[in-house]
Amino acid sequence: MQQDDVLFSSLELPCGVILKNRIAKSAMSDSLGEGTGIPTAEQNRLYQRWAEGGVAVSIIGEVQPSPNFAEKPGNLVLDVNSDMSKFESLAEHGSRNGALLWLQLGHAGALAYRPISNPKGPSELDLPDLQCEGMSLDEIQQLPLDFAKTAKLAQQAGFGGVQIHAAHGFLLSQFLSPLFNKRSDEYGGTIANRMKMLLQSIEAVRKEVGPDFPIAVKLNSSDQLVGGLDEDDALEVVAALDASSVDLIDISGGTYFPGAKAASDGAGRGPYFIEFAKRARTKTSKPLMLTGGFKTRAQAEDAVRSGVVDVVGLARELVLAPSLPNLWMENQMPEPSFPRFSDAPEGGITAWYTMRLTDIAADKETDEVGDLTRAIREYEVRDAKRTEIWSRHFEG
Image (cartoon, rainbow, N blue to C red; front, top):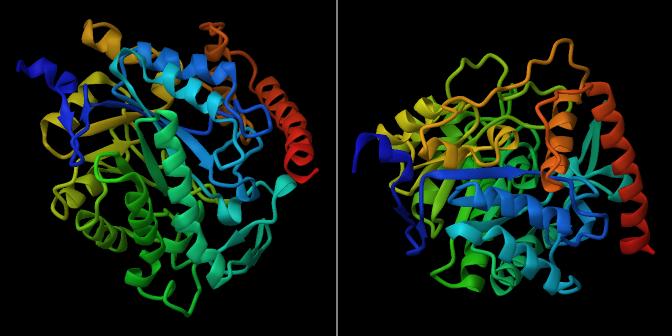
């Protein structure tokens, strides 16, 4: 293998499944569901474009095992009531060109979208910008079984794997964080107890899908919050995952809690969590994926060539250039052109990238940056319409 081919070498996961290269489309909430939890033609096209663009695997963010704790009304819901033919179509479109399409098993917990849910987390919270009820022991013990049922349905629909979401402040991340997990039972206190929910979810999913189906975990390196999950505790979780049946550990960081700083705050131009990944590598022989802050091909190559990580996770980079892996393989576009936003209003950049996903799904993306205020308005109007649809469909 030539030195320049490092990103395009294959990787065999512990379960035996082979990734064709080392580039993954990280999970993002694409918000392209139409409000009933069912995949749309637009989603089919979006994930087809990433597959045709050369990624080894794409991960669909925030797929819910029930409609009760969704992150947004554009999320997918995969349960026994779902139209499996629509999920089968999505799996087929996103698995072209040798790509794999994985579902991220989500539960927003305390961050569940309040207009369509009654948020619940590990513990009751009553903060100025965040309130939720605490989960009962029965609800906690049921969730791994719900994840497992959704994973089995994903397998039956033709998806190539699943990722259990334990990052970014959503439910399993909340259980890991001593800032938000104040339980005094077997699921609270020490990190060994706080990670129990995650480990039980992995065990339940593996029991349901068998030994040959990829299971990944998305894990925070830290919450980047005072009193939250820190790197030392996160490393203990990595060590525990090493003894589990997971096939890939996707390292990220930060939370979406109100007032929390973004993962990129204070970061340089390099990958945001590379130093933690170096520490994690000493705790596990599992394949590691790193998501966040890869801006150039050289950074991605260096991370894999060094042996620190096995897979690079790209998100906004692939929103700007859906065929970036193919371009890199052809020695083109070593660095995507990131738009410059000055005086961006709160939520504006996220809204812009989300609406660009809509443009990609319609094959209508352009190089024009456009107005962030307009992006926010379009994003909010769409969410409002889907909230009405969601409420009628799941509650009516």
